[in-house]
Image (cartoon, rainbow, N blue to C red; front, side, top):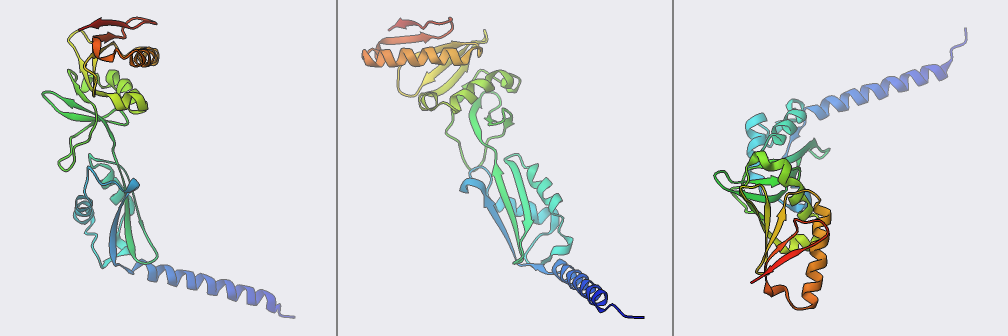
Length: 238
């Protein structure tokens, strides 16, 4: 019977590859983590500090330098970080050079509510606590509470994503009748918005009014500018 050495060589090579892979995986699993590194997306760590993230990692998994990679639960670490009130998303992974990397994306506040309870409204329209380490420069909202978030969020989202509105609007006030008033950064008149319906049309009218009044050099003569009526801007003078 003729021996097929090609099959034997192929089988031996496969066995060697499996052995080396198993040995490498086992050896890599028991290697020690030499460094824990925190990274913030966009380079921003405004609302949660690197120290705070480090504490969460250490308290929940005893993840310190020289910790065995084999016993680190990366999914658990991510879940713990994701539950932090200032963190939007966390990605935790191990590198081949024995580093544990935690990449943190923070929540972004769009407005600050001031009242019996003060808090931020974040980019997802959710309630966000104030930070102890940083105060965001965002429009100040009064007369609302967390139940009003579905109503007021489209307004602050519109302001955040419009260069002109973001530059000019600094305050948002809701009165007892449910109407909204906007305060401006420089100009000494109040914008009566009404409800938060038809925002696109209302702000289109406001921009047209602003452009015309600025051209006529009359921006400083108005006391109020009302956008509550369809296709028109109603003004009162001082």
